[in-house]
Image (cartoon, rainbow, N blue to C red; front, side, top):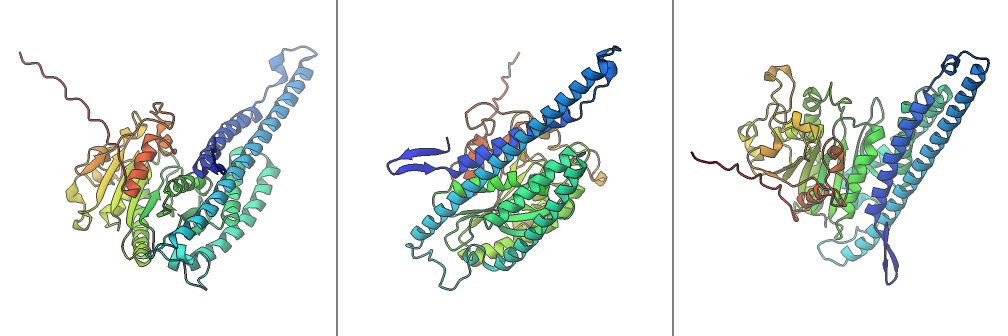
Length: 439
């Protein structure tokens, strides 16, 4: 259910709408895979025997498969439409909630409303307001270009994956424009680069997250990470939490062939560090230094955050989530600069997540440029947090847990929220010490 009954009617939970939208997106992806398989099915007349009716049977089969493929494609489009509708509805409810929260925060002397004449969004974005406005124009231009691109793809009808990716980009661009989303970085070229502020950075803000995703991050996959940011911001009833989802880099697109390569993280880390400095300045200017910043790296993003941490990333906390490692060449606290001595560090890895193959693996000599340093779960000074249960309390493990840990309601998501807000944390259970039997 996405709402609960109250004395006044219903109270909508936007996070549940987001979860439902994500589930629809997952199902649509599965149906799209099936549609691709069906569309690619080719059977010759010879498969039906060498009789006069073989050609007719083959034609009937082709017609049936074509119709089935079209029906599946229709289902995918319907699911995407519902997904976009749920996402838009959640955003609408959040805007209303934010307006009400702003009214209440205005009653607090330390968190006043913007002064008269302040441009819309200025209190939330400060000096970023101009960049947000400029990026809105870029998104509008990218939407027009992508719609033209989609028409070309559909006319050729040969690349189902490219069509789906284009549709996801269009849905993202449309949602950004429809909901006045705060885009801090935007470049649609190649796989795309983007960074988004979710929530507001203003005088009352106390918690700011900086999330960096991992392998397969592209413009057309960005929405799933933005949804995580939304869920974390929406979970704070005080309205004092904001998130930046940072994908302003070139990410590896294959976990096996590119995932072990440290060069992507080495290239992105300086940009992330520079952005962290900018974020710290923004946060301090708006809050007077009263807010904490938490860098959260998921999968390959953990290795990127780790290298930025080594370069002096201006954050108070670092959280590794299913992280590939502490960063190429980071094997001990001695490999981190003195400026990072006060940073609180946390980590979590679901049981049997294949990422454990990368964690702490030297992959040979350092000069190979392969590998991502020490295992964050066992790194000195890092607090290992519990993960392994989904929102229903069922065990999540293996490959599906790698991204499943980001779903709202899971124990891992609760721990992410706890680190971000300085709240309750559940540590990982301590493995029992093997019993030693003396002769």
